[in-house]
Image (cartoon, rainbow, N blue to C red; front, side, top):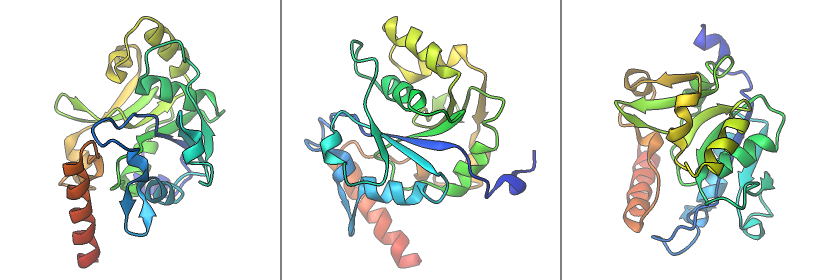
Amino acid sequence: MDQEKNKDQFCGGAIILAGGDSKRLGRPKALLEFGDQTLIEMIISQLKGCFEELTLITDRPDLYRALPVKITGDLLKQQEKSPLRGIHAGLSSSDRPWQFVVACDMPFLNLDFIRYMAAYAPGHDAVVPRVGNYFQPLHAFYSRTCIGIIEEQVKAGENKVIDFYRHLNIKYIGEEEINRFNSQQELFLNINTWKDYQKALHLMRDRTKTG
């Protein structure tokens, strides 16, 4: 497959998961400040360079009304709260055949890498970065073919995203491919604690200094 040919093509839609409780931070992580933007505003700004349709999954829609995104919530509300429910809601809310799913706390997305992944989405149920046995399930593409499988998985009480991978035709993106775009793998850095937040701020400042 000619990756360069597909580099600038529109690649479906994107689903941003912002439904976490952020218990360790004590406040919604999506609203953390990065310069003159919040984290969620920065992520949306980046993804707009690659996707025409952005869907935000949240159980706090009041916090995000002003954002230029479609907002929806979980559909499987009787089940335990989990990212799988968010992925299901995003896929179900659109007729796009496949979409990029990302957590709301990943400030260093790499659009070239996302486009590279997107080129593999047709013909697969999912496209997932993997380093050794470690997956990045919330920086991955998923097809609408996953909707029914997720419903069965969640109703069975299996709420880990990677637990339903055994039912899918997946294209894994390995470490060598990932490192071609970001050898430090900062594109997967996510914010769960105040220490993570400070690390991200320092990294952002360093990037600004080096241009």
